[in-house]
Image (cartoon, rainbow, N blue to C red; front, side, top):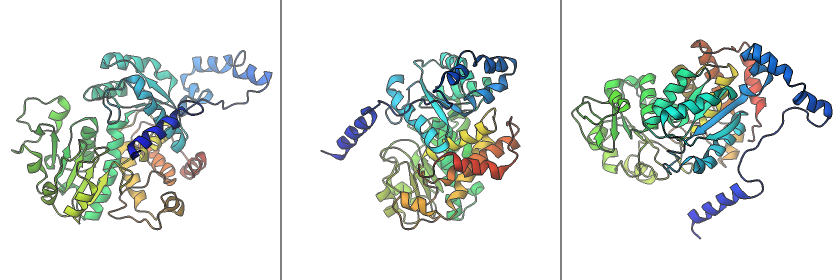
Length: 428
């Protein structure tokens, strides 16, 4: 039996054996006596309901709203599987909920919506929003995802983030910061090529600009070539990032470039293209399972490369789990009204800074490594690094406060960080 078939069978057993699925609900209060039940439900439950009716903010005091995230999808862009529909998306959304709980102690419900019309989708999410402290949009295809997220951010007063866009943007931005440091280059002088023009690519490009990449030094490419101002087939998101340079191919775009970000498909970056890039090129080839250029080809073609992929079997995996659990943790802990650019940039910088710190023995043991230190093979932290929670969440919470979107500010940062460290078992 080949490896792919073995993985398929193991995954099906994992999801089906015992209790089907990956998540469940457990009570958080005593519930074994008549008195417990009279407090949990009738007649005692009337007291918190009346309190919330008088003051909506009391929902955070008397219910689980402040620790609850909705993971919502319509199944139109699931992983690399495409538009497989809401029901087929459910295993992925359950998995996301499990990651929220495991890494950040956040409860999460997966909600699959059988609706592809943006207006109807927004209406459905808006209607159920009172249940939740935050909303993680997931696996919704472009360009509809841009409109859906923008509408929900505008119309709701809780954090909303489309992780396929912004989670990827935050982790690649952390990699870009550390890649620039290793390459000895300044962000405002670096030339960047983004290959792919979907939700993740657009969000990455936008956050790169917020980090300090100059607009004239960024080139976006799609399946037709370079996205230029001379084309008449651009949607608003592409038009925003179109270049006025007289180039039309990816080959022309990458010549002399310092950074290549691939959010596209396998084998689009050739060794010849890679050799045409500037010294110490930063290449993030994120197509899965096969990147835009294979790891083995890349390191042979350019020994000075700083290389990242989306795969766990190569160094520098760009994995969204480095960000989204902790971003929502920090946002919910200060009851932020949104997740804004300041919070995203704070997360990216915190993740980048953590990779520059000495790696604890627990992380080395988890990955069966003898040594790991900041450098070309260790650009961003490992997903199982237990320090991420107490590093990223406070950075996001502080940025929320400083940008004026926090409704419950933190007053004791040391106590907050210690509480985070105690919230989730490090071994998880």
